[in-house]
Image (cartoon, rainbow, N blue to C red; front, top):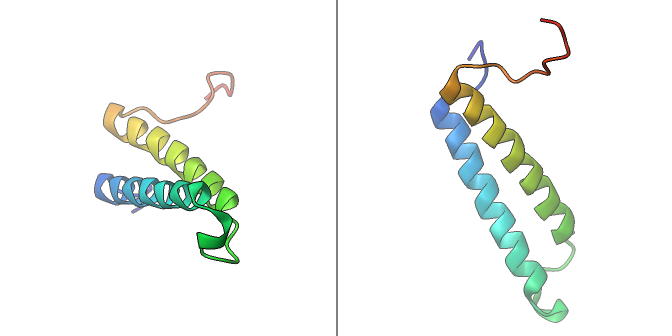
Length: 75
């Protein structure tokens, strides 16, 4: 993987992140006494959402063939 993860790996990470975010959302909507204790579910959901955003941007760059960088960087 010299250029980064392949399409299969990127899609797999995106699917896992979506499943983790959905499970964290499910746990947040449960009553407090029925949640799995000791896990900061809001933080888990936030990290999973961040991974989803990064993997979506990476998939767009893989599928279009353009690197993701700012147009103001000059290269």
